[in-house]
Image (tube, rainbow, N blue to C red):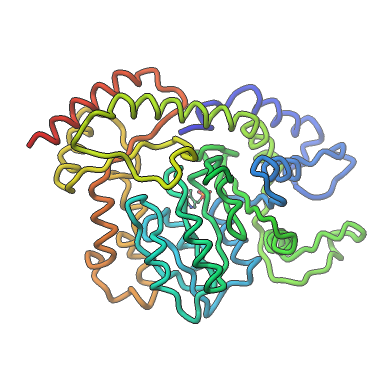
Length: 390
Ligand SMILES: *Cc1c(COP(=O)(O)O)cnc(C)c1O
């Protein structure tokens, strides 16, 4: 849940400030009327610096951040991009929108893309890998970067679900050539709607900025109408109101993550002696942003028994199993039908290994405010012991 739980005075004041300062919502120009304050630009700089990263280009969503990254890298028709079968559908949509073909890889017990499976899917057409850091936890970036170096591929980290999480001390989104984030209403940091693409490569940043604004090169010595263009683009611009909310949220981000980690820690401690399930495997548990607790049973049947009992007790779950339809490639006929390699396959036959891993898991959302956390832990404990007994 995160950011949307703590929207308050700070967000309101910054939004009202934009209104009071001439109500300029456009991110470029109108310098005098807006008193030379540019909130989108400020948000980009502060967010990039929060990550310890050189550049950020704010856009309208996490979906368009992925699209801008692909545009900046000139990835399109004829190219292949490797993506995990467990992600949000937007990762696939962005690749398809670019004209490139998504090539789908298995996940492993970490619930993130399986590096060993990536290598099997590389062809002459492969240009990039998009690891997705699912549910707050890093993909195996050391292994992925190694494969990318060996095969001369670009890595774009889809960090929509792991804002502020780290991998051996480095903020996620800053390890690959480019990283993308979503600030939609249910993400850790929310702008209402929004996203950003970050990079340490100045040239890639310039191209992302151009792609996000119809190819404009933003030469401030000429009027916008005469601004030169070198690449194709589209309009993915964030506006000042969304950036104002983002700036207020950014001030709270570290506290939000600390609170999530604290709540998740309490829940894990309360469940730690249960033998029938294990917690999700992580390469760097220290870096977990803490917004989700995933438990994994030995068999899908036990997980099903547990999740049915959890649903009956009205304890909310997150993605696994309830929203798997949105997050597993084999459940997306609208995407499968657009990829020649998969379009004639039966959905049940797609990615059985990953499906099995996912069907053994149940996931719980961790919120900032969990006044009934102890009660929830007790409930889960009882239900888990029952589900494991049979
Ligand atoms: C939310 C999400 C996106 C898309 O972000 P929007 O801002 O909603 O467009 C992309 N990838 C993943 C993994 C997501 O969870």
